[in-house]
Length: 181
Ligand SMILES: Cc1cn([C@H]2C[C@H](O)[C@@H](COP(=O)(O)OP(=O)(O)O[C@H]3O[C@H](C)C(=O)[C@H](O)[C@H]3O)O2)c(=O)[nH]c1=O
Image (cartoon, rainbow, N blue to C red; front, side, top):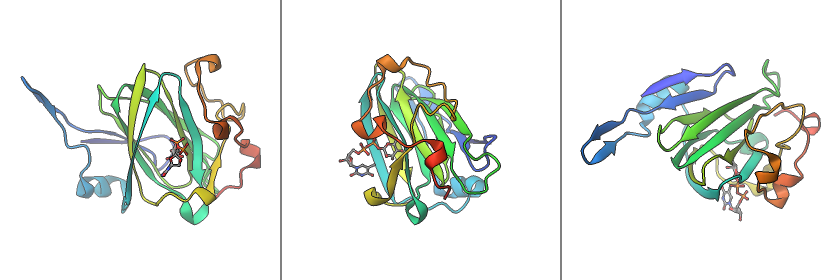
């Protein structure tokens, strides 16, 4: 398993090994000891899965304060562009983002620490998205950062007229209105 820290401190791209043979492949997609040795003492408490069609954009979501979630995300079908925006108070990369294409074919994962807004857009016909979080769902604490806030400079790779968003995600807040946490 390869761990590559990104230019935003604490964000990691993780590339599990795959052992192929005539039947297909086997891969260890998470191993607590190895993960914690590289990333730190993160304890996941909940596994999530979502399924979306082409152009669906989910995000950019975050849970505030003590309810903030670290996430380990991957795609088990299709391909997405995954985006994490740094909202950590005092961070030298505050407001900057990491954007990584995650595909089922490559099995690449992204670890996003607490203090980030997270979202993805589906690049393939459909995508099954799997992720671990280290804090439970707390809807009262949840907020949405506008995916198209010009201050974020995110290139989502597909035109907005192909995108499908929830009503919540269509009316997220701007970066200037977010209180760092
Ligand atoms: C996140 C979540 C949602 N739900 C319920 C609440 C709604 O009835 C339904 C759909 O929720 P929502 O529209 O918030 O789902 P997504 O748009 O996929 O939200 C996720 O999108 C981005 C990519 C994220 O990183 C977050 O994990 C999460 O906010 O699932 C739950 O019961 N538990 C949960 O942990």
